[in-house]
Length: 171
Image 1 (cartoon, one colour):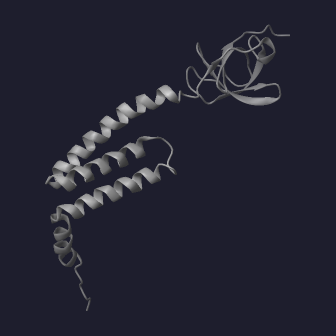
Image 2 (cartoon, helix red, strand yellow; image 1 turned 45 degrees about the vertical axis):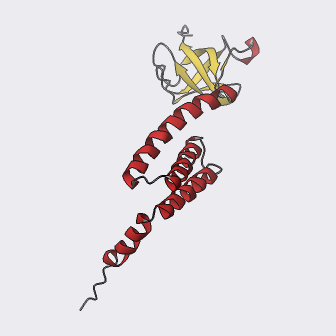
Image 3 (cartoon, helix red, strand yellow; image 1 turned 60 degrees about the vertical axis):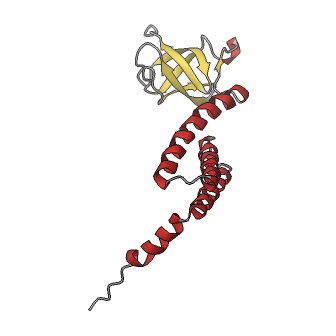
């Protein structure tokens, strides 16, 4: 009733013939490397470029020297790790992280008392405070601050305020 077509026996010999020719595998490595390096334009981070660079290097080496596929794959993985590690640390010197720890002017917050709009957790993001009519992310260094209570701003880390709980006398 059913017509059974098996593709793998039909494709496997052709695939194996393609991979047995060393130059074809080299071209595949180089083309994959170039594709990964171009993909870096669309994927954030620099690691994809280093994966592509190592693939292009492996393709170039395997073009001139006869190396088995699994050896190429292992060397590619090792070379990728090394390039990501060395290249990443090299690039960080020229492009430092955008995180900053800002000390605020008195008008910008330190010492100001704010209302907690969402529970503030210790050393974890997710809490919110109302400052100058806008809600901001907030964390606490000492203890949890429930919503509805008041807190004092200590400093700002990027767009997150570091606050401490305060106890106001009841009126």
